Length: 417
Image 1 (cartoon, rainbow, N blue to C red):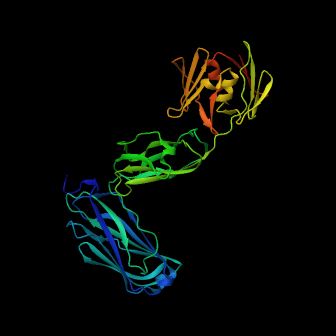
Image 2 (cartoon, rainbow, N blue to C red):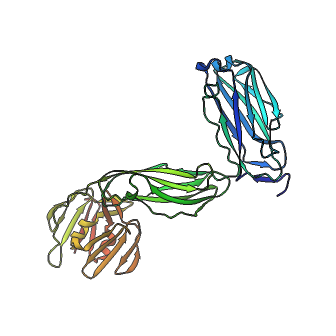
Image 3 (spheres, rainbow, N blue to C red):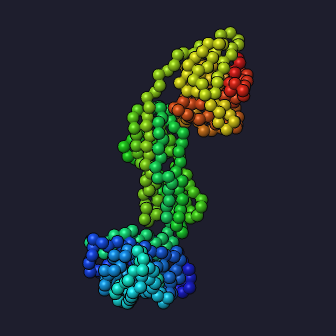
């Protein structure tokens, strides 16, 4: 590494910029002060005059008026040697007030800001102090800005100075909570995802993702992201989660995402859901007798007919993305399939329908359909809605060699055996 002029991302070794406030404490009840820090990501190693950013001190009118000879000392640690902190030659600025402050060099790594007196011209007063940092040759690290103020001092209120990320990875996860709402016990929900991005300047490695908390067994992680690299920028990594409760009641757990972000090594996402009891099974629906039969389903209606007989159902057909979805059990019954030949595997989320010598297998969320083991690609996928499995009627009818007819005016689907 070049000793001078080479731009580096400061990573790995933490150095702490500590801010101590030595104030008189007058007028504490009226005081309102906050402080913030702007910063840059790259500095030149082995050189001086690196602009680290600006410290901003924000005061209200009452606080600014009572300040007199109050001091703020900003200091870098003495070790390792060679780091220095100075005010920029351009000097400070006072916004919203007249008066005077001074900045003096206490030692190589410390600067004292003294406020002599301020006369506010508005309700908000801001002191902006540009800062420079001297970086010794061969340095490699980052600086975490940490405010330190004695309890009860004028500067004890306000927002914390944010972390300055120099050459590190900074994890961001959205959303920070997943609510699966109501799901029937024993029927897994549709997958929800969290997006993991990197707002820093170097790669983040995901070390582990796990589910813990009160009800960890009722939520399942769909993706193994251990060792996954999340690069800086707009690209993201997603993790899918489903709610698959075995028993009824409100459930909660925590999705934990471990990474090598030094400031957030564990990111937590709250998981919640409510497991409803399994609905009582409706009346048995006999298969059509003889070689033929007609079943009619109406969009949005909680009943259908088989050969003219009306049967009530607990969920209704619907249309999504131009495709008609019917509830699996009732559709299969209408096609002459008994309940014993309608199978669901919650682990693989695979649905199996057996009718005579034909076996059809579909997977929730997948567009692949297997008919007696032969694959076919559908233009839509089965899904779970209101705790029931829904299938695209056209594809299942085609696989079982039955005829369907769609009446757009009446919003009905007619299935003929």
